[in-house]
Length: 306
Image (cartoon, rainbow, N blue to C red; front, side, top):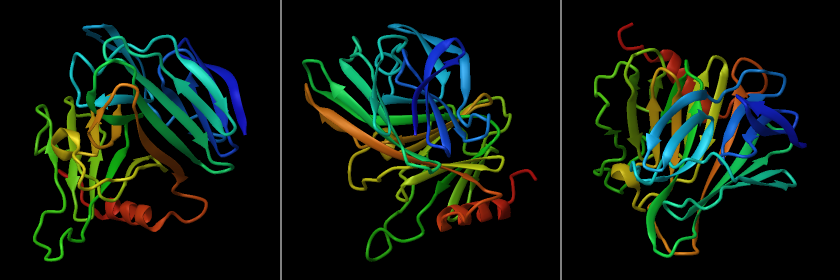
């Protein structure tokens, strides 16, 4: 395990982690933000790099940068995209690092992301924490957003089993945002898997669901990225009940998981955990069955307009 070697991300200082199978790079002064993810021996960053994308907020200019970030849902202009350009603390751990943001003046939230690399495996664990350092309760849900490089296909697994003894209740949902379209040609809905292609289209789209399977995937070339999380059916979630969302545009793709809504009292912390896995689909050992079935379904599913 290699921890703490230094690098650079478009002029911003970074730290690097490596376990011989996977390499991770994170910002050392801004964020918390993971900015690079690659298999050992490869210079291909699976995460999107968007150093020039930014927008104005009530609190100053927010730089998107790319990579993986932690936000709090539901999204609002006043309380979501708050600049995170400085003040980060980095604590080294035996198998990774802890990235600690200073409390946000606008919300009182302190964001923390722990990165834990699995020994010798192309896998890592992320522990996302939101702490209320303010004086009033905050209603929120932890929201982990992974920006991936364009040109791939997202995989959203779907349940086929009923959720009630009689098999009469709905077991899946599809949520759209105002700029999204039901007839978006990037969207391919199958019985066991939904696929969303990241190909040039000229307009963004966002789609959400409640993911009972607890994982999301993104296939880029012959590399398969998986993020897993614990679904909590029965708990109230933001965005019309979503715990999984995707945002697609020409520049990047976002794969997002969300925890349940909670009322976070002053001094309290809520935690949301993800586990990441990266596979080479053309070589090496066999893929887990669920991921192999997804790739087989993707190959068999006709592309709209084809």
